[in-house]
Length: 90
Image 1 (cartoon, rainbow, N blue to C red):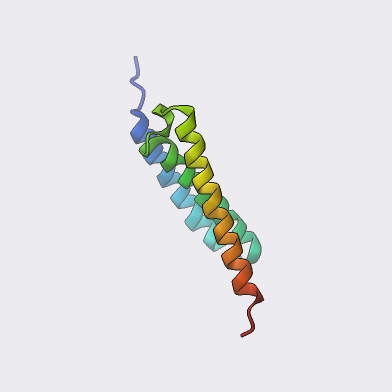
Image 2: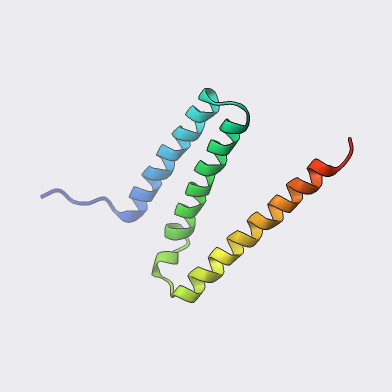
């Protein structure tokens, strides 16, 4: 009978696959499409790290909601930062 991979090793392997996808996408796509693909892959990698390495899969639902709210708040701040930077004169 085959033994299943340890969950940490599985997530690590998925992160390596996503890293190769990021490198491949940087060579294949450029412009806004490449940026969108890169940010999407980065969000998936951050989600995997949040879920497994920060042990959110073992925590109670309230802590999961707090972590999701913190990530959402960070994204809101980054969007406003980009909007501020784009509206300033050079």
